[in-house]
Length: 592
Image (tube, rainbow, N blue to C red):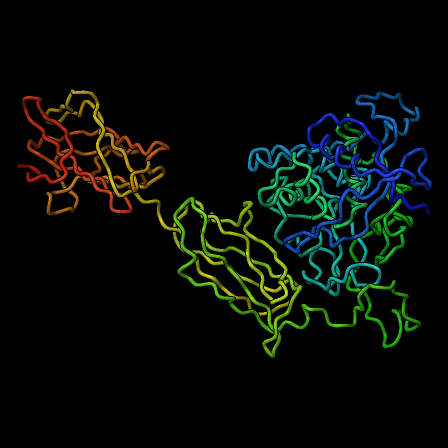
């Protein structure tokens, strides 16, 4: 089988800024003199050395992928062949199954709203979907986007592939011994556990559903502060998905191709790829093989095995393969699955110096403290290259940088993994971050964190012209009280405030007579309002005030976290000369 590695991507301007940047980077890497079975193409030299995923949590476990490259001819954006008329190769390759294409575009729209700075193009998702699963086996999905048969990559048992022992008890891949990449976007279970999303709104996160998988891939690619319109971030995101220069080049070539024009085709009729990066060698056989849905599926050279997930592979007999014979040959440099991995040697996790006092932040601010965890053997020695998963739990909207509530980081040479920076949301209170070892059932380490309310240390009343508020008994004040909040001299936005009509300057309990607010739902009198918040300019306008039949002077007090206090003096008089004015130190008692 002819390998498609090393093919040079053809030059040409893409129709999007992202594709243009990608093509420019690839064009700059071209080297003359390349040969091979390129069918008229030049060979692609490496644009840059592969950069490992900095989190240590790649999407696919570097599983095999389809190496087919797009045709030389630009895609026809709107072919309309009659029934039975052969479709030219370029036109066929440009067609994306309707449900699959819809999933990519919906994922792009969601990321445009939730992470606009990422600039994720749906063509990137389509390129990865093409390379990972041939667009879900040419669109073999049902109406909800779920694949008709699960798509599984080879067993990651270290025999020619990465060694990733089971992390999901077979929940996603049906294999309780080793992990396998799952679904049309080929997520390994340990990554899907935190990256999975519900893209079709059915309440489930299914890696075999193209809507869920495409949205998860979009969030995975947009982690951190990535801007995919920049070539460096784009390349880093793709290499994080599968750490191979050839993979990067192949994805970029399909992204460029789809950027020049594509169209939807009926589900199940998409073009199927035929060449794989591992030469198509099957790694697992389903326990109950399913009949292929079309001639391209289930044959050697297809990425998945074409059937439902098999149970855990039969353990090998001592000294031999699964049938007791000679062990299968293992390519040089691949790990021996019988040798303990670094993860196997971890006995426990320890807090690596994170103090609880460091894990407090004001709502909306970044935490200054860093959560660090150390992986150790039973003897207390550090264990490097172990994946540590940090999970946020509790009633909180705090996240790690990039908006995720789960992050996986590999330990360094000192056995320490540092979680990404925490970002406080608007919900206040305590929450927990738990560190666990991916692939092991060991006790985790918990870190308590707290989000405090936004403060304001000063409140000042703003004037509504020179006209005082006026009211007669049983009437309503003609204007509303407005105030401005600041903290250390700066505008204090989104600060919570409480407004209470109090009994006196020395008695801050709620008054039972005099002015009042109206409940927005029932219209009943209320004399304490909570849940108020200042706007982006630090301003807060209170609802209208009303008066009962009691005349006299009354006090309205507004308070905020951080010590901000404003007392407003109100007077209700039968002659209609009542006023409302700020009174930092009022001497009058309510109702006098």
